[in-house]
Every structure is written in C-alpha cells, then in structure tokens.
Image (cartoon, rainbow, N blue to C red; front, side, top):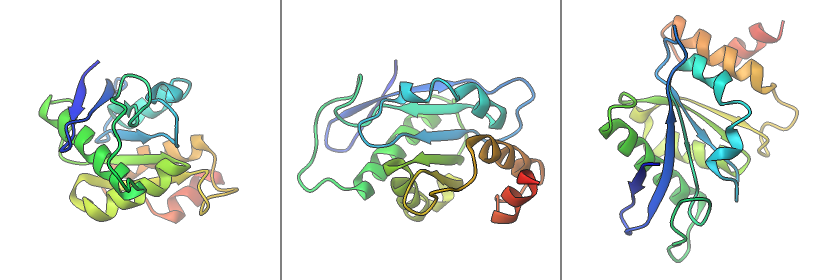
Length: 166
C-alpha cells in the first residue's frame, strides 16, 4: 500500500482503485468520517469506479497510517492531509490534476475545506451524513450525478441530483 508523505513527517496510507471500463470521469477521493479506515468504503468502491479511479485513505492514527497528530489538529488540517494524498496519487500517475470528492460525516466537513483551499484540485465536492445533508440523497444518486456531470463536462449542481431522483 503506498503512503503519502505529510509536511510534518507523518505518512498516510492510501489505495487507488482503477476506473471501471468505460468510465469517463476524473476519479473520486472518498473521504471517510472520523476514526474510519479507507477500507470502510469497500462495499461501495465498485459503484464509484464508474466515475473514474477511486482513492481511499486511512486518516492519521487509523489503519496503516502513522499515529501522529499536530497540536490543535482540525478538519481543515484533515483536508490538507487529503491534499497530500491527492498529490501522491497524481505523482504516481493514478489521477490527473483534479478529482471529485465525496466526504462522509467529518469527511464531508473536511471535503468542504479541501474544495475551498485547493479549488483547482476539486472538480466537485459532495457530502453525506454531515449536519448539512441529513436526509439528503442516497449514495446511488450521488454516484449517478457525478457520472452524468462529466458526460456534460460541467460541475454537478443540485438540480442534477433532483433529475436523478425522478
């Protein structure tokens, strides 16, 4: 399993799952919630592969990642960690310059920081099970909307999700 090297010397383990045949999207970073390993995405990784290569990673202190936390670590720092994972996957040739990001719970909040702080690296940010998306669209709906957005070559919007729900 490859590791991304962080600026403080810690290493985060990540996995790149290849795109499904015929996938046309840039790929997606799956951003797990607090205390969840990248392997927690295993039941849905194949669904997301329709949007391109899928990157999963272990947060600090989880799975094969180092258990090193800077003082005052925050969700914004978690977003910076994810950017290091994207940089490492891009350097390995697994992804291009930008991907979609789907964050679950704390991963959803950190995905917002990632999109704000590294906007050229994030095609679209999607959240699930965070305080803003309670009762929101099901995972299948998000996957279909992400696939369709790249067919139209534009960012995913709320009305894309509404059309898939019909």
